[in-house]
Amino acid sequence: MSTSALATQRCEPCTKDTPPFSRQEAQRMLTNIKGWRLTENGKTLEQEFIMKDFVAARDLINEITPVAEAEDHHPDLHLTGYRKLRIVLSTHAIGGLSKNDFILAAKIDDLPKNLK
Image (cartoon, rainbow, N blue to C red; front, top):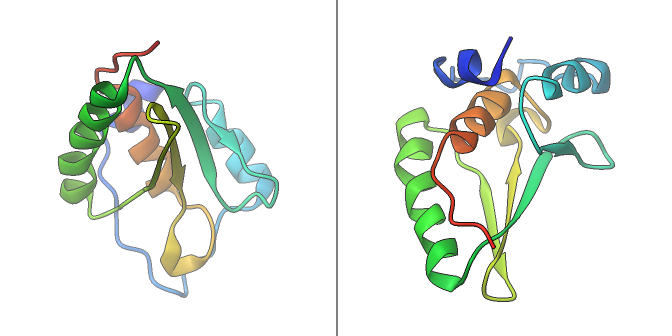
């Protein structure tokens, strides 16, 4: 499955009975998105962008907001050092990763970014 194929899909609600992806499943899905990595515990995805400046970082956050709202799946966004934006994805309802995280990552990949 390519990034573009994931980006055309929609997030589906998970319940606490939905099993999170195993590390192996997450690693397999990771091949479909660019620049993202599994965190050490294997329960979250993250990517860090060094933006051109503070305004570019804010603009990317503003681009992510309607996408996350439309999918009802929300990343953790960490802006530090005025232009370093770290995006962390996980499915809070299941305490780990689901297909939704990879779908949102692919959609974020498709957004315009003004990088350093």
